[in-house]
Image (cartoon, rainbow, N blue to C red; front, side, top):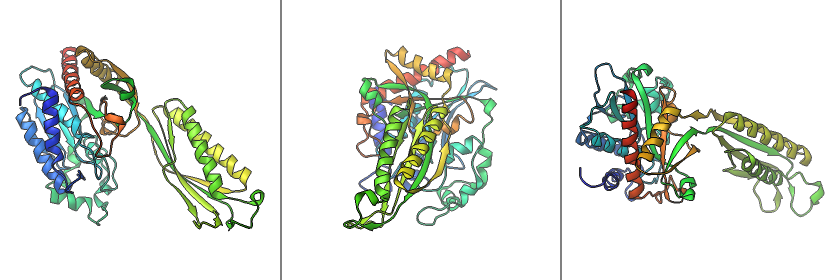
Length: 408
């Protein structure tokens, strides 16, 4: 390998982007043919960096450098799967940074083993799973996931077998927490904060907890021309007021976000007052107490709106996930790694979920965010600069050296 870290990273990312299931756009779903090709390409890059590489029973690519006898292992990784019509950097950037760091350190003694991981199921687009690849390592893979089916009716177990994996071998992938030093993940921010602050890198403090819910309001449908305004029980008007309530409450809560992503009105005719309306809620915060208080405030506000407007209402929680704090010592190592290269950083929460959420259930975990243009992600317009990729690899290398010095 030759060139700067940034040049090499961008070339590797371009090579991985060629592995897609849809010509003309990047779509690489878990256990698809493109995933299989990308996994083999990643394994090849790992071997070029001096790592012993293999694809495990659930399709994770594992590149390992052995350490001293009995030493613990430092894990570095991210995911190779994508959403439909994706960008190049969400996931693969962290894999490439790990490979380049391993290559840079190949002739340096380390007091621990080093593994680079390329997970295959972070986006959870194809099957009804939740970070299945990382869950297998954490000993939290759910056997019922094997019976889950994709949109074409293909069972996960069958797709895994066709991929070359081994459903029966998943349980054996669980790692011993005592054997691990920790997990580091480099990832694009997927938000605009770093760009707004003019900083290339950020240190993640926590991955936001999340509450999702569906709200339904029921009033009375009526003729748009004959029912006076003061006698209406307009469900959509109530929903509109509730949407603004959600926006105000989210803006006022510390480090929180609150979103209505979808809304429906019925019967949906131009000359009929909507008798029913339904909308979604997505509420996130890095502090579960803040999130829970915000959820309670929004619930109470919607109930008050419904009562005042004469509407029946229901709020159904569809999913809930606790916040995941990042490990302070590993975060400090990443911060020190950036500082050693003259790069200023800031601390910030992650609004999106990552493999680090699951890995934190197994061992200490930390994340390094890389600035992305406009905060755009899950989109072909996703973009980072060569200079920022270079800074990320250098920070990661220095962080590993920092951990080595501390362990030694």
